[in-house]
Length: 344
Image 1: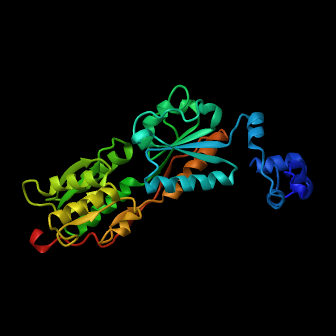
Image 2: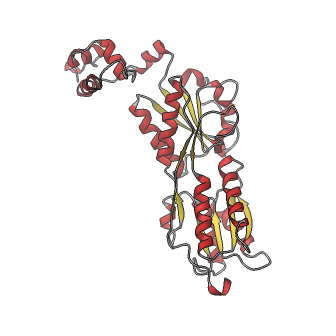
Image 3: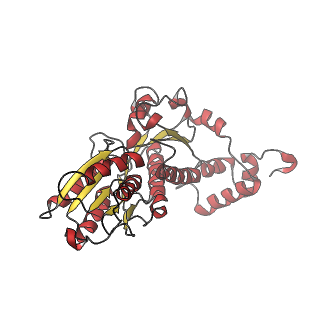
């Protein structure tokens, strides 16, 4: 820190690093590549750190028209997955001198009131979950994020004229679950599906249906419900007590739904997995809090946020980022097992 408690300036950093103020501006503005050597950039960053220098972002925004702030629009603040997405986005943003404002869509659906009065004056770009896509209509003027640079998360990459996307390999993930259950001998399967009409859940439903159609004798019953433990419990109870042979497995669109399915099994006196296998999707902390622990699909949420922020930075540089599709992993735990011999 400069002596006497005086806030250090870019001139102080330049003097300490032995470079010009213009070089300091290039490095700390993340515009040095191809213009300044990596060694010089490292020296400037070290000098800034030693001095405790922080650029005056308000003044910079007046000069450049940039606020170095991104908005992350999500359906809810309480869901662990979106908290992890934010963590990943914020980490990448910080590396480039950006901040991330987290903003939920009211009740998870519908337009959100512009949190700034004029989003275009307060933020440089938007990251948005497809589950909160309707909220974009209320941000800025003209809808779809008010014409601001936009990157969509978990959204259809094939949408004509759509924004850049960062997705998870959800089709592969749900396919791994379906094949895992089929390999265990299950042929009567409930798909406990989210009732949210978005690309990610449509892909899951289509993939599960295609996998079971390819297996002779396989029967699929789909029950849709809200992403809520109680709603999932009620939906699972309906499916498990319907007429006909009882299903032997419940394949769920999320770990929260799987928790509801486990409650339904317990209510009916069914043992998981001896009488009923249950699988989830997300690998939340909840997955290992259940007993038995939940077979589920692990999603790299932090990577989603980080890749989304990187794509937005690419847009802000004037380039168009390629679609991103991140791999997912099936994690097999105690909630799934072989179908009982009497049910085979």
